[in-house]
Length: 100
Image (cartoon, rainbow, N blue to C red; front, side, top):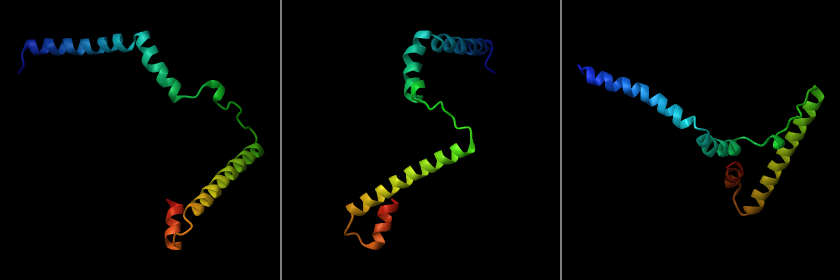
């Protein structure tokens, strides 16, 4: 097959790659330069998160009703704007503009 030189090369490679990865990615400066900026873009700050969790069923129902009402109002506004933008469209084409 390959011989002892190939086995020594493979052993060195198997040993070198994890040690190099540990040294490179474990460096605190690399973490500070590459991970922390991405983390700040990915996750919201603590003061921007909602920490108040609803615990009773009535409060949850009220919150869901509020969210549904807001979504319905946004949808009605979008449909109204779409109808104002395309007043001359035929009825067969209007449904596509609203849907798309």
